[in-house]
Amino acid sequence: MTRYDAIFVGSSPNALAGAARLGQKGKRVLVVEPRAAAGGPVATEEFAKGFLGDTGLASAPVDSEVEAGLGLTFERAPRETVTVVGEGRAETVRSPALPAAVGDAVALLRAISKVDAPNMPVPAAEGGRALSELGGRLLGLGERGMHEVLRLLFMPVRDLGVELGLSPAEQAALAAAAVRAMSEGPFAPGTVFNYLAREAAGDGLFAPWTKGGPGAVSAALAAKAREAGVEIRTGVRDVRVDVEAGVATGVLAGGERIEAGAVVSDLDVRATFTRLVAPYELSPEANRAIRGLRYRGTVARVHLALREMPRFEGVSDESLRGTLLFAADVAAIERAWDAAKRGRAPEKPCFEVTIPSLVDPGLAPAGHHVVSAWAPQIPTNGADRGSLADALIGALSQVAPGIGDLVLHRHVLLPEDLGERFGLSEGQLYGGEVNLAQFFFLRGVPGCTGFETPIENLHLCGSAAHPGDFSGRSGWALAEQLL
Image (cartoon, rainbow, N blue to C red; front, side):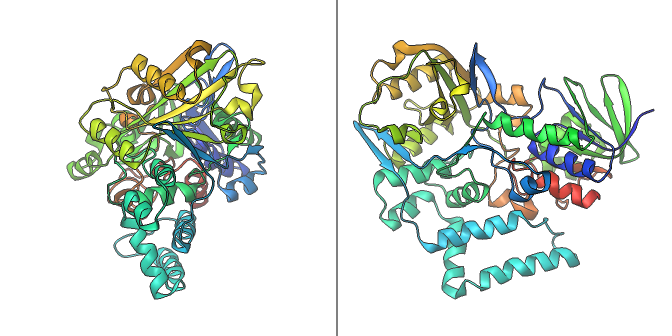
């Protein structure tokens, strides 16, 4: 019988980074993935013949330590503008004037992302030192600076924009980043925290494009894992964790029993304890806590294949290489959320739109182009694919008259489609909302520390674990613990 030191179920950049790290240290590692290619929702896929799109996450920054540790390099194209389109105007935002406290808060969250989540409520020695260092960072800001950073974490992003006197376009750009992949509107407390978390992860206002798309990141990590001796099996469905007397001993995959010293789930917590592990393996209290985790995916992805580049009015060539935000102002984003929280598609959906083929021509046949749209505030089982694609084309027509005549193919993934395609609970792309109630030592399985679960030898490594992104950081840190 085959035995591995570790088996990873799922293959997002977090799992691949962790597997590669273990492989570098001579461990025997297996990765099993139900889809045809590794990467999970960090994917670039053909949505029409010859046209490639980012069908899950729109950007995929990799943690600097993971990049250095694996010797990775990526060709990235910066996005330096957000052009806000609405009510007959197009205004380009380059760098909103934000206070120093915003930079301090982003630096703090980046520092937290590098720290293993400590045991709570009483930290162990290592966890105590980590918390002490973070506390020292805060104290180093001075009384006023510390107060401002902590205040930001709980603010509605709408209030921040008003307080700073930002223009309507700057406020809208900030708000769109603050509610990205969140089931809230910009008037909700804690939305500034989500903006700060996105900036700390490298996919905030001006997230760069990686040549080849997010899928190129996953492919590069998979190649490094294989170089380190990791075995990656794709197309493996119906995987279950083999649990004996509360201990994970391996997996059952495709009728084969495979033993392992450690089993690592790259899935979100709910999927882990419904699809991989039967709920009866946990206590009633643990099951209740897991049911209380917040997912609520409200993002759709829309892609258009164009036979040629349309003529844009009032938008510069430079701005077309950035992001186009179709939301007149913060109130428009809030109105979209008002509909979504009631289970209805917004009458005027908001869209964050890019044309990645302008900086990465290999995504489309020569002379053709790809439009990629991120549509927030789209409720699960509450929207129509055709209507959403029509809404996107209608929005684009404000600045690109006649674009509808250039569309060769329309591709729409609603939240429920994303859930089915990538195995995501409620279609939540980040393995559970990244909010103050599900962050740092509160992320993962309630009542467990960091990457641990109630099942011995079963660990988490995906975006469901701290720090809650796809940078590879969680898998890398888990591998260090397993070593």
